[in-house]
Image (tube, rainbow, N blue to C red):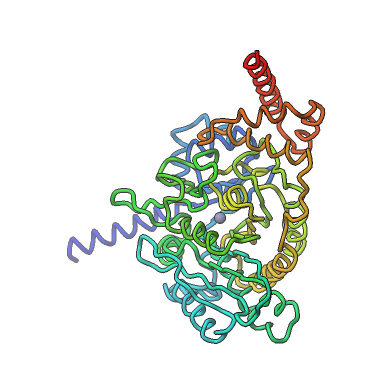
Length: 474
Ligand SMILES: [Zn+2]
């Protein structure tokens, strides 16, 4: 036997041994500010991974184990009251019904299959669809959007946005938008609800936003989350759901290119994020739904701060609860109720553009079992029909009451107090608040669930501003 062959056998043997000893698990730890800080500081991977108000789940792979070995103090904190909830997270990507080839993933669409299906759909329903290339990625792939609307209808139309696969490994998040497209087109002529929706709406679907990442997850590295932006010679990737221009650079997003929640070199640096901004400029959405997996949650703004609810919390809650019920019991909750995350889709479209925006965390794993997919698709399609029918002017009845004005001023101050915020001036808001009674302000603060510390901080600022204004007047 040639020395080369022997070396090869030895290497293979060593590889399989090392491979078996690599376990890629999910560890559940108590959801506390201390643990959130540790996970962020060590750049451990815990986003979109079965988190609840009480527990955080993070990916305990070899990399995480190495990091924790050299941070013993953090390890002790994290491992206290922890438990393994998934022995091998990667096994979900290799279940029986998937073919192991690059070109067939069973019930799940490859990028190529997705494009083919969209092209066939556009050809089959020319009067109801328009297929568009809305961007080209760093690896030269087209990002497709398909617009559904009855071109012959002259009714006033409201616009909706539906996105899938911000995160590469969340395969199911492309399937639900695709299912909804087929649901509406196939029922158009036979079903009143579907025809009404297509007659009076413009529905913009981007089923696979992060195309490069999606291809990479499907062909190379299943647990890949980000896009494929290059830093130097390495494709380290940016987390597209930390790159939006709203409170970019705040909590729950990393400045390290190696982190799974890397926010990017600047806000909106990524083509995928620019696509969303351009689509909003063009269509002026009233409501937007972004599908992710997993956790069985309905999430809404704010993401960037857990110091307060949004001034429109009750509206978000109303639709959120209904969507949770349609999905068979998903938990509706303000996103930062789990942990703060900045530069996210929901905050950007709502905070910057006033769009009613939700993130739906589908299923119990990134890639649910093929047998579970039809139910998730069908519930997801119902959820979208509900929103297309009911959330057409969600903020229409919001009255510009005193309480709403106070809430708006408080919201701007909290935003300005947020670290790394570009907004630094809140003197106008503070002066405005002086025209309201202290009890009124306190009542709104309570209504917004403001943290006691933030209340004290803002009350102090109002007093200081009042003093300053009195001195100015003299
Ligand atoms: Zn996600």
